Amino acid sequence: MNFDLSEEQQMLQDSVARFVQDNYELDKRTELVASKQGFSDDNWKTIAELGWLGMPFSEADGGFGGNQVDTMVMMEQMGKGLVCEPFFASIVLGGGALKRAANAEQKAALLPGVIDGSRQLALAYAELQARFDLHDVTTTARAEGDGYVLNGHKSMVLNAATATEIVVSARTSGGQIDESGISLFIVDPKADGVKLENFPTVDGLRASEISFDNVALTANSLLGELDGGFAVLNATANDGILALAAEAVGALEVLYKDTVAYTQEREQFDHPLSDFQVLQHRMVEMFMEYEQCKSLLYRATLESVQGDDATAQRNVHALKHLIGKAGIFIGENAVQLHGGMGMTEELRVGHYFKRLLVIDSQFGNADFHLQKFAA
Image (cartoon, rainbow, N blue to C red; front, side):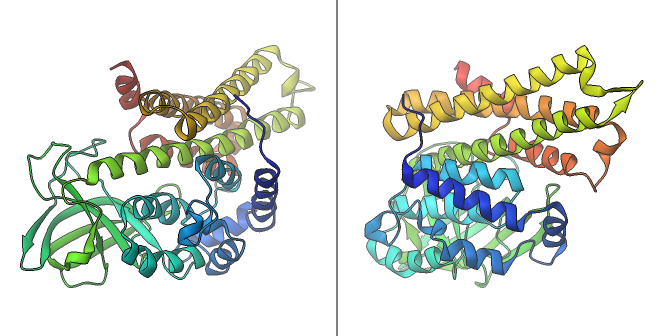
């Protein structure tokens, strides 16, 4: 496989890297995280003006026709700065469902606003009883008149508080854990019967618990085929895993490089910590874990673009397992090798570790995907 970026992808990588360098010093990010909505409207406007929000959408829909490789390039750089603007929630997840399932009318109504940043999306897929199973759905949408009535509860919905539309998975037929019988709907978060409980997450982002109580939906709220939403949801989740893995690889690079730099500066017994062989071995192991993650990220991403579905799915499971395992290993060692400093809010090591722990829990943790890979 050719792992070299194209000229356009290299320019995109450089552009995102400059944005992160200019806007995401730790103190600036801390201010954003502490604000009411948790991100900067100015940054979001800049991201839209640079065209990044349109990257994953087809040219026919007003985007740039990018694929998972382009998203990987952006997310890896965003991971280096722990970017908190909702690119992942709105574009990769919400936009991923929209581009796969929306009809021409829905795309014309929503995508221009999503691409220019005036609209934001969220994907509500997780439920309390489901753990990591996308097909375990108790939220229901029953047909009534010309539309539907939505009832149920969704958990940990990223970016719901600022989203203008939420894509919701609901059961329209079948049993609780059947893959068939799941449909997707576009829901206005301000509609009657929709209640949001918003909260900050441990990594500084924003999420919501959402309850739906007899929410009236029009026929055009249905996204894609009735009872055929699982395939769209699963494909979107796979794109989400690839994007999260790319973000994690960016964070892992910062962690191991910060740790190496610190051990070269910090002296103990009249020697830099980096002189001690046992610590050298530890940092080599951190580097090797990072490199394995990066290599598997490239393979899984390219297989998703070019390969067959079964091979691509297997690689996604392997990647998510490795990212979870390596994230904990590198994060714990980075904190330990920084000593007491590694536990402080003033040092960025702890912030990256918390983000990696959250990434491990999204769309299935390392153990879950190891079981899926083995099966």
